[in-house]
Length: 126
Image (tube, rainbow, N blue to C red):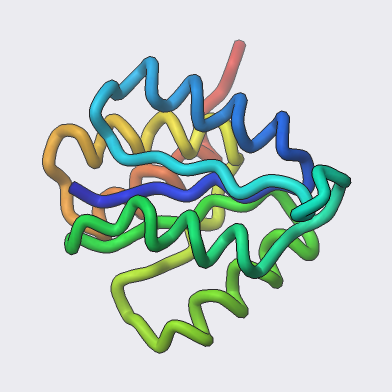
């Protein structure tokens, strides 16, 4: 199953999105990597790398990030890993996480999980 990592400047936001994903797709490996190591706002290379390792079951990992340095730090983790099966999805973080977790739970592969997360840009609320 493809693992998911939710990256945010806020620990609470990352954990909240991860919690909702786990409710919608119980069993999908999802980890939150939010905030700095001291609990403050920001992003942590180490937290993201550890989260990737924690959800990696061999089918790849999709990282979803909120904005700015969260995206940049996630890209640094991917580059440092040298892996092709750890990718960053360009999507709204909450909607993308739900779509990705359901797709992963249904057995979709890495590229399809990423694509389904990214397709949420087109989802309307009204």
